Length: 157
Image (cartoon, rainbow, N blue to C red; front, side, top):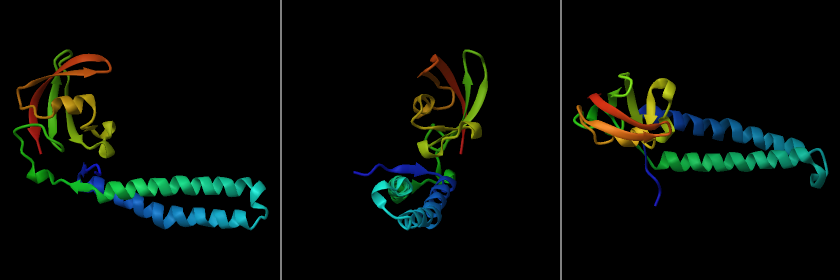
């Protein structure tokens, strides 16, 4: 059974663009490198040919994995979200009860996680710990830095 990946439209479009780039730009480039190396003679002692073939194998593996991810992706629309609990794609404002810092994160799939953009993976300890919580709930989350208590202040789509 293939693993379903839930994505925003933006995340899906990025994956699609990356896949298209690999197929239309990178694949022909490596094919050209292989042809150029092949033209240099004896393939048994041709390091350029071996390197190009290895690069081709890695590229094909990456393309295959991306194709599977895109094929099994489900695009979620943020305007259809229920704001009563924390779900995938929820924007949640939380307060660290240890230091009283407030933070706002969007819970996203692993493929879209970007801490600089305040997007945390649903697979991360904090992401997992916040799922299903309502405003006012306190989540006790085991992080690499120890046990931290977060209060859910608000949830927005």
